[in-house]
Length: 204
Image 1 (cartoon, rainbow, N blue to C red):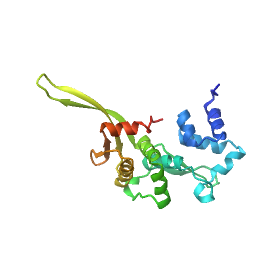
Image 2 (cartoon, one colour; image 1 turned 120 degrees about the vertical axis):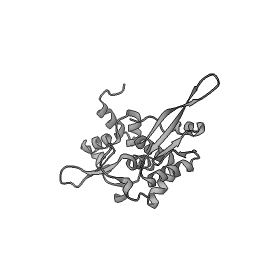
Image 3 (cartoon, helix red, strand yellow; image 1 turned 90 degrees about the vertical axis):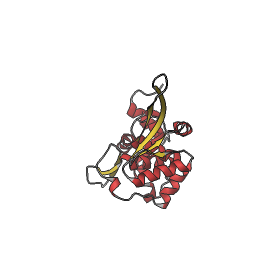
Image 4 (cartoon, rainbow, N blue to C red; image 1 turned 180 degrees about the vertical axis):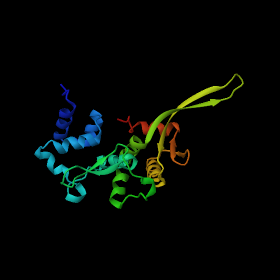
């Protein structure tokens, strides 16, 4: 029987070897919350996970990183935690900062991860700065106006660099898109929407 305590259940999954992204998908608990819980449990097996994989030689989970990178580029920011340990935390709750005023580009190892895990990267971007909505169009006819409805995805970001990263990712997996306006990218063709539906999933 599943534990009814969400924190205890999530930590049990983490100690069983599930990644943060996998636990997030199973429980709906935000990644930032899961990460904070993991760091504050005091359990020995989590201590090594508090270090940066790139800085400390640990294996990087490329799937989770690609998703987190998408989230960060949309609504993320880095904050320093309280205390004197010099610990920094990634948050994705519409934090301060204007990423559209500076150049955004991936370094070689990040681009390699995104190229290998493009769906995860797109999912992160859409979960932070995107939506799936129903568009209604009115068409005049001899017997009066008729309304048509169809689903579409929107990605909204002022940064042209981040827009390009999103559209480049769509191009890599063959999803057609259009520039709806200065800050919005639209995916409205039936096959494109169906392809995104396969892996994007709902926001939490």
